[in-house]
Length: 126
Image (tube, rainbow, N blue to C red):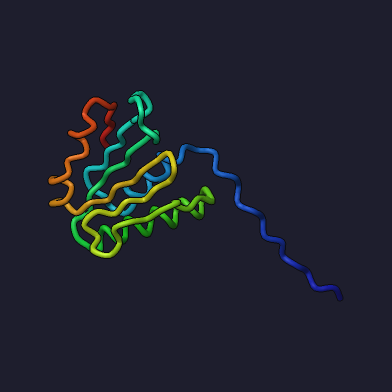
């Protein structure tokens, strides 16, 4: 009797917007004060979006970072080209080429105040 072989189906290709997937991942892990800064209308900027959020502690910031990477890899087959700030987790940056994700602890976020720095861009809060 021949043994049946189970064939795994390849996951469906990701058809959504990467920025929405990232925001959803941050929301699922209780990221705080999530904003998406649309940079497309600003001259001389090399990316389309800044996504900014806060975690309430070092472990929370680490979890947010890890989960965003896991979700984007699993659902979109995309890894960040660069990750910085995982040593102290005050401010982690994930570079997805045209999308930059900033995950802050509250004090660092208040100090750098990216929303104010890019205040002439369209900002959407979640």
